[in-house]
Length: 260
Image 1: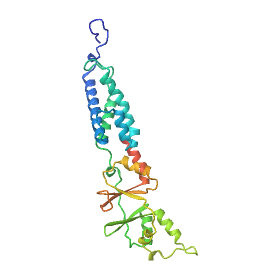
Image 2: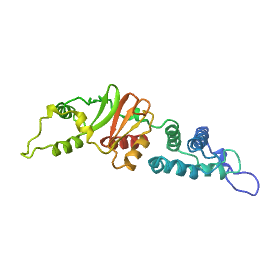
Image 3: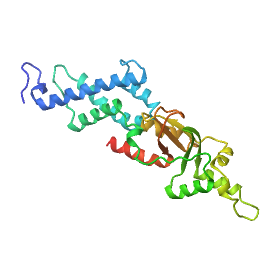
Image 4: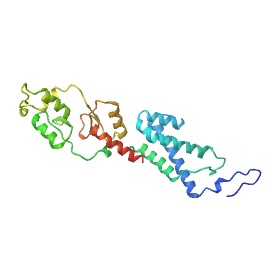
């Protein structure tokens, strides 16, 4: 350690900082600046406003990001302010970022540029559909065979509705005979069940939808049972996958692992 000449006894920290530490500082500052640029792009806000304002702006759309990585970023932003503002000369630092801090801020930047999309997060499972002319008896057998809770109904490649196991149960209860037995299920079709459907418990999304956005949809819409993933995010698109409320817990785990 050396002390500068003259009346001041301030330690020349620049002579104590190693090349590896300077490299960490540069990587940290580069990632921070790139994050502000990315946040400005995502929110449509000017890059010159504060990090806190940018984080809050994105957090209004991606609440879970605000609570996890957004909160971490604000803490890292405080470190960045110390690096930039609490020095008089180049490389004169009172502290330097740890390797963990650099890894964390670079990971946040990576997630902002390329967030986890639902297409990468969903398990690879078969999508089973029904036709309107399918008998109710056959449809119920498929429920037992596959264990799924939602079955999209397509006619000649066009989406016409969604059958859920709870809908089947309600429909069957309504159609009990006075003697307590069921009518002939082979003579009834999926179209008969759909005809009595009064509410929509589904919506469509594209494979590019982020996991955070999918979770927010289920959180904000209590009646939403599932999201149908089609190549263009519309009912006319080819069905690729189904996301149900049962998948939310797994999606939350993926986000937690990603931010670890």
